[in-house]
Each structure stands twice: as C-alpha cells, then as structure tokens.
Image (tube, rainbow, N blue to C red; front, side, top):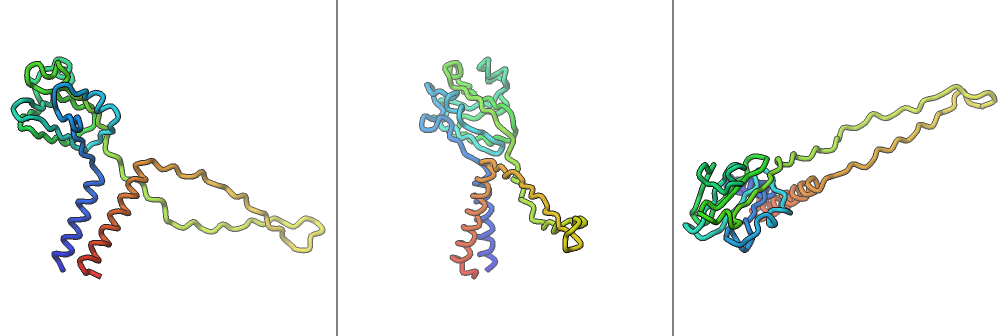
Length: 195
C-alpha cells in the first residue's frame, strides 16, 4: 500500500515537471552542425526559465560553448562560461535574459554554428478565482409617494456587470495540465486498487 502511494506521488511529480518545462532539440533534425540556420530555428520559439536545450552533434567534431555577448560577436570560446564536446549536450536555462552558444572549433562559429536564445522568466501560477461568498445586498427603501397604499416603496437596485475575466493561453494550458494530472492520478489509483 505504501509503495502504491509512493508510485502515485512519483507519477504526480513527474507529470507536473513535464508540464512546466519544454525540451528543445537545437536545429531539430539537423542537430548542431555546419550549414544550419539557428537564427531562424530560434525565432518562433518561446524559451522560458527551466526549459532545456539539447544539442546533438558528432562528439569531438564540434563543441557547445556558452559565451558572453562580446565573445558571441567575436566567435571566441577562449572565455567560455561552460563548454562540452561529448556529442550530446543538454543545457538547462536557469536564468532569464539572452544566452549565447557557439561551436568552439576554429571556423565553425564564423560559418554559422552559433545560437542566441532569449529566455523569459518562468510563468507565474495563475491566480485562483475567489470563492468567498458575497454578502447579500439589501434593497434600499424610500418613503412612499403621496397617494400610495403602502408606507414604503422599494427601490430597484442597479445591476452592475463585471467585464469577463481574460485568461491567457498559459493559464488555460495550466488548467488543462492540472486536469490531465488529476485524470492520471485517478487512473493510477484505480489501477493500483487503492479504491
């Protein structure tokens, strides 16, 4: 029973983590290679903190060097912030702002093996709508007009309509992710015979 609960908890954590970050394969099927256009590849992507970049290339034939803006412009890896030439390099984007990557092999950067990604801060969790009940309004009364049969005349309160709440696409996505996690949790619970 305890191992079943641990499995369900692990499932929930892995689903939540997967929903929060995106893994990008640099250059898609071209990988990290000569002749690819990394400016175009990155143009339509929305990079966020905690996303990962995966560079795939021939180990030893290329490298992935994270460099400063000045070293990016100069195609210099001599002061690299990080460097790898293993063939598969995964970089987790930990901070917002521009991140610069080049191939440190002589002549490769100047022939286009360079990438800049602009990383946005992680999306904050959407605020939950308020569920606190509102106090019932009382109908104000005014003295009756002369000739009226009752002592008071009720005033009709004005109805005030609030504009619809706009939801961002990321809020809707997070809501969909939450429903998916709840569905997987229910499925795991039933499959494991917890209920």
